[in-house]
Image (cartoon, rainbow, N blue to C red; front, side):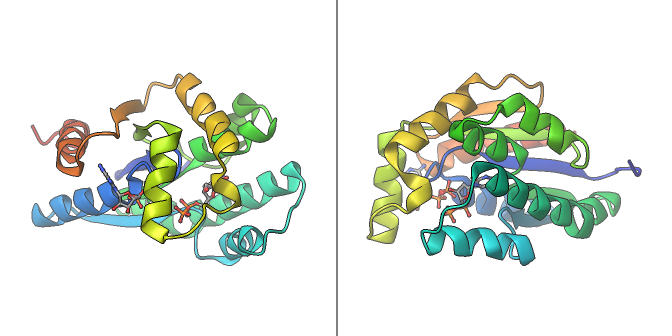
Length: 203
Ligand SMILES: Nc1ncnc2c1ncn2[C@@H]1O[C@H](COP(=O)(O)OP(=O)(O)O)[C@@H](O)[C@H]1O
Ligand SMILES: Cc1cn([C@H]2C[C@H](O)[C@@H](COP(=O)(O)OP(=O)(O)O)O2)c(=O)[nH]c1=O
């Protein structure tokens, strides 16, 4: 692996826990302090990310192994073209979902979460910090439904998200920090900022 001078901070959790909201708040706070940072997300807008989004938009199904391969291919591209270069350039990379999402979502389909993490470790750098947003599934679905004014998509069915949530709650990795996502956005942001400031040596 090349020299890394930047920091990789990932936002993880089931849909509707406020990841996008918190990534924007943190990005703004880093920009205000002139700390070079970039936001990005997975699935990406690249070739494989677009294929993934098209699959669930059109309610198509593929085998869980094919689904896993698509997420791994998307991440491989992401690491090569954006995450790796940004880290080498000394940037703080804020990523909305990363490989813990694969372990949790594809793990919830019956694949082994630990084996998924190991497959990722062959090409994807570990995050320096994984902020894991925890929220009752019913509340997460309520927020998504309210936001979109529509029924949850295939990825957002209650029973599936319950399984995803269970895998997330069982994860034990040194870079994971759990946050109670049921609180007001500014309260959560205060905790996010405190963890990030500690990581970046800003306090
Ligand atoms: N702390 C919060 N409390 C209540 N609603 C929230 C909170 N954070 C975000 N929301 C709202 O919930 C919905 C989902 O938030 P979002 O940030 O898009 O979540 P995610 O990226 O995890 O899917 C949005 O409508 C957002 O405005
Ligand atoms: C990154 C990743 C996402 N996903 C799922 C989680 C989400 O339900 C879905 C799309 O991610 P996301 O863009 O976060 O969803 P939305 O824009 O609807 O909030 O992809 C996986 O199943 N595996 C993965 O590795």
